[in-house]
Amino acid sequence: MKVKALLAAALIALTPAWAAAHEFVSEAVHIDHPWSRPTPPGTPMGVGYLVIKNISDADITLVGAQTPRAASVSIHESMMNDGMMSMQPLKNGLTIPSGETVELKPHGYHLMLEKLNGSLQEGESIPLTLKFIGTGSMDVELKVMSLDGDAMKMEMDHAGHDMKQ
Ligand SMILES: [Cu+2]
Image (cartoon, rainbow, N blue to C red):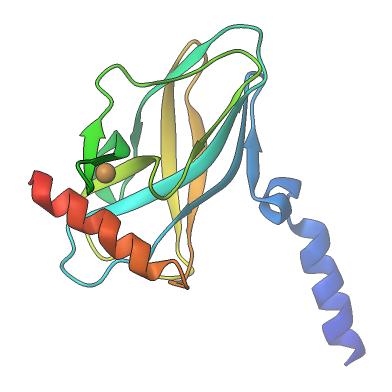
């Protein structure tokens, strides 16, 4: 029992600060809570959500991302058009003005992981490199969180994606 407690304490001590808070910081950008959803087998696309705060004194633009888990990643915006949810890629990227925060979240901006090389599993951490204009690339990890009460809305999101294919 005592040994177990000591081991737990050692593990906590070894955990880097960003893992506990699940945030990633560079001199210009503060990334909070990058996460994704599990995907059913055979689903070609997954999502990525995160909060980006620009802590520099110049505007920055998120222009793309890369992950070993998907062939490509694009930046999308969800919107209601005539009562239908639809998606639109942001061709010029997503600009985060100096000092401001932009949230990528369900029904708003999101990352689209396209041509997944396997379903995204709950509990998985997906390496993701964010590419910016105005500052350097940043490596983060998307935590795949379980489906919850929001799953219904998520289905709506995906209906929108399918229509665009
Ligand atoms: Cu999308």
